[in-house]
Image (cartoon, rainbow, N blue to C red; front, top):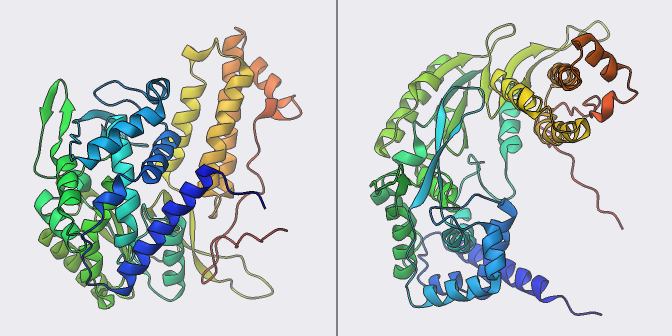
Length: 448
């Protein structure tokens, strides 16, 4: 039998390390780990951290060093330097570069902090080492930014709880969560599990590095910058205190990072749940976003709720064999999600891009639609998919007409006379309607 390649060996060694840390943390919930820092600068850990950073393909930090620059400089050379700096405690994180990006479907702009490539590699290495320790503690109500868990797992809970009779919903999200988490409280939460002084000092250094905005550096005493590799994990570590303090008497909590929703069986329980949620957030120095906090009673023909990109509404199925049908919680892309799709398609077909070949534009639209529909296909989304594809066809027809300086009727003729709509993908037949108390995605069969 051929021996595994060095890359596979190092990957297996890192996984073995993570499994060992997880098992140790799970076996002893009160254990505080005091020897983790030496794992951060292990070469195989740094190598895997670089691989994760490279796959994410992010922008440069304030030093303007790109991923291509690092590859030209030499990845091994960079990792040698980081390993040496970490061993002697000489790692000094740079401030992150602050940019503002639009929120899909709104006029708001969200702050995003972009660390340097070197700092992202170190943060990824820290995350690789400490994540298994905290994963052993995280509760089932938390779904965001966790391995082997995701948005659709949380969405399935909504479906199941609604089927069981929980039709009162408390919806909210935390106002400026990533920017409001107090450093002192966050480090206190981290120290419940980690006592390694050098690792704690490195985490504090990243929190205190601050952000550079419009040429000046700000070092606030709150916040874990959104955009940092380790920030989602640290946010979960802090919000785990909310999960831990929650009690089932207030309803079923579903939390995806800073978005939270509680499924309740009565109005009284929902009112109590909202009061409890507000009090627990206040204890953490956080508060719910007023514009997104409300109680909704799910009724047939009534209003619904938006959560994790979907709009959820109670509907009745068609009558079958004399029955009146059943009432169930349906979901499809929310207005914001649909508007985001239209905005992206409009951007790819705008007048400023008329010089681009039509085939290239179609490929770009297809790439976006595959990703967008890949998420929303697990829902009752067929009608929404039809509307988005018709919009894409319309924009493509207008693009072709303008490109050839012809009327829109000519452009529509080129699209609709084509056998395959010029290669634009179809979204028909890909929707998977979720069912209560069933896995949202069937397990993949093992093939020989």
